[in-house]
Image 1 (tube, rainbow, N blue to C red):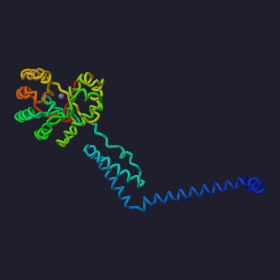
Image 2 (image 1 turned 90 degrees about the horizontal axis):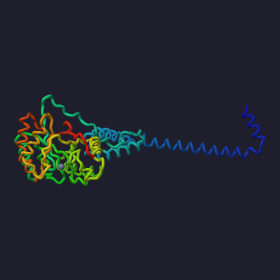
Image 3 (image 1 turned 90 degrees about the vertical axis):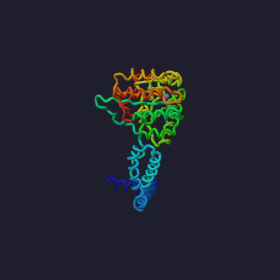
Image 4 (image 1 turned 45 degrees about the vertical axis):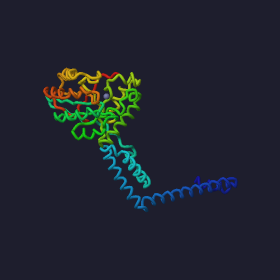
Length: 336
Ligand code: ZN
């Protein structure tokens, strides 16, 4: 009834003709625009989804590559750059095909931070991890390897970027492991900032990888985690407090020591001093990590090594190389 009333008043009132005509024209334009948008939009969707089977096939193939890449990316970190490129291409193809976005695929591969379970030894088993820092060196490393081989003892070398990296392959072939010490070992540089430390660590990591094909994730901080040099020389307050947490989150394992031979405490420590330190500090322990040095200058470290091994073997220790699942040896107190 209201509509009929409206029509009557419309025809009666000439004043209302102009605004009503304007309303009708506007409505016509609006309806035409919406129709055109719907028509062309449908055409585009039909074109990519149904009329182009090659695109659909490619997107399916790319989806498979994305899944495969995600699976292997956690195992082969070296291929992460290539994986990202594959993922980027795959995602482009998927988006072009108007497929639902894969949010998980768009994120870069996550760095593995979950640590494997630590090795647990049966009651009564005594394990010694001999570690040699600052090498490899021309004079000492071949002698150390010969002595270790003689006693069938495995050990770990925390190497520097300026060492004899051409020895690394031999070290690994003989069953020992390589740890990262740093590239430069210059306290004032490596401990000047968190970024400087990681840049230096990455440099030695790349050198070791180039020489061996092994991406080592076990590290030792120069001076150990309890060093004071990071404050006195690096002048970076709190850096060790941050790094000791941060390196583990990045998938590294850091190792300090609980037996120091003292061969770095003086220019040339007497053999007897080295032996006495080992006897005293290993006493009562069933798992020990022994700090020694592998440089041309540390001749008494090499001289003392047979006696060190013989003494520890007489105490029931077996000699193993550090790995990612070895028990951790961390200094309890950080000094910076
Ligand atoms: Zn060192």
